[in-house]
Image (cartoon, rainbow over all chains, first blue to last red; front, side, top):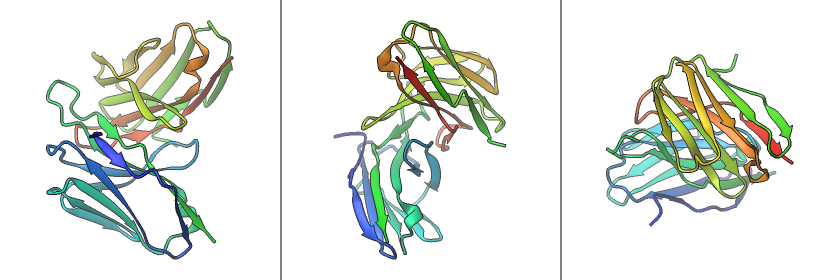
Length: 114
Length: 112
């Protein structure tokens, strides 16, 4: 099982739609999670951090299910500007010295159409 | 001003040349990282540094070297560039483990 796994998409949705992405992780010791968005050929930008069961920021909601080892990102009322690749990320829970290094999913591509 | 600044933003060079990519940050973070990104492969860690005297190899360090000149500066060198090092390179910083990383704008490097 991959450390962090995401559906690559693409998810093609109309403006105003609600869309949800899931991300599964293999290490039950993972404590925190981040969602980044990355536009084509640009740097990843932090969208949301999740340290407990979930987080909400405007149209964006993240929910963490530790029992099933997945985290979701829900986007409500999609905008054209939400079109991007969304990366699911967690720090590596490694006690051999690399603790804190991030494990990146390969991303889910979202395309919002008019 | 950007918190994490990379220079140059774009570079085209020839095989065999020595290249240095620079990264500076004003976030006061101890941890700094260098990644490369290739289409379809996601981000891969090249080197990382948890403080000025700490340098560690990432998953793809061959052909690269780094220098942590100060808390705020972390440079990546390609001693003898080869075409398969053509990629988008990102520098990132973070405060502590379990905190997110913050990325620079990236350097687009092409080796002919």
